Image (cartoon, rainbow over all chains, first blue to last red; front, side):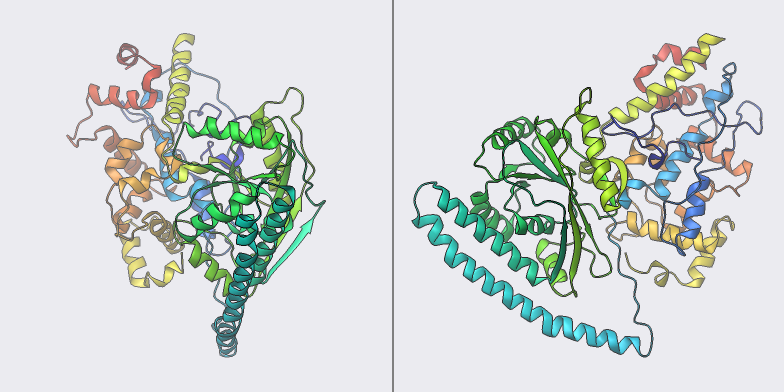
Length: 413
Length: 137
């Protein structure tokens, strides 16, 4: 039994770690010599779930284990100190399955073409997708790009100054280009809710599955976005085109960057001529079944936060971009050789910081809204753990709790 | 990830099952294999220390370093054998042996006072002074 399982602790106000209660000392069953060993039924939940994971891939429906009565504190004996089985069990449980890696698992499509009549149908499908659809879509994309560039560069370099007309034309061109992109994957996108309006003191936040999230949203309204600089042709596009809609750059690895970026965000939001700002507070791409912790930077700007929930329909294609496994180009090719990209986008009601609410609580509240709307499960891990190790603070926290409980019991004797 | 059981034959599964004294069912072994492949990103045949530490839940565990010494570089059969101790079906004797091995990390065959203090240090970190620990034990 693992009471520190993050799934069972839905709490507001913590940006990282999971177990907020002290680890209860387990039920004693035997006493052998000096070392007393408590046989904790090791992570019952995980084993059962493992066995059933082949039949039903729904890994989150398993027994809640924290309904055990708390034992009254007894006098501290040597066995309490020596019994490390709960800690070991927790570690082994983490090895077997952990909620963080689950967020980034790309689900490979279940094969359905094993039959004598299904297989030829599938082959026909492949032929149509790769032979007919892909070239058509690629052609659309090329034509679209050419049209875009012939219109964009003259406007960019020939029209002088920063007048309104120029911005407006550039914005419309970017929107058009995004529509071309969406057409190139046969995107069937349903927008719900009021269309975003362009006014100051508002920020849009959305869950992040792939870079195409940005394209899908940009098709409807030209957002300004805050992005990590990418290499290659994506970087080129970022530099030339996205500058026109107003983008803010940041470097994930640069810690000092945070203050600078925070200031830039604030400036952007206050200026009425700027395009509405879109932020993906997860900081990384997640597989559209879970949400990781939101970064609170977007919520501390003192303005309205408009949540956007995006949910892709997996039947057609899994739109999760696993940046470790594929480059963006390959990801686009995969989308262009699938039947369609179907998704729902909900524009939710703008939220304001309530009285007495901390920024972290506000972040969690908005995250709850987005997760509920898009049917995603919440996970209390920081997205950047994909690239970095967790800070030693968490281990220290656990150590502190254990030490405190031991010392407290010592005093009670 | 692909279909993991297509890479494991029935013979493989039975061999692994025998190695862990039949503490896991065949389905569980297949699931463990999927997990092993997921952790072993470069398909080396074993999971390196780095890959274990990339599981945040594992690396925030106070005893992770000790466990890492025991579990680093194990191939799949040994990995399953190690985890079998944690199964509900494992014997008490087996579990005690594992706990003993965690304490006696340098394999002397004995658990000394120093070992006990060291484990307590791992568990409590800087929240308890060295003196307090020695007194406790």
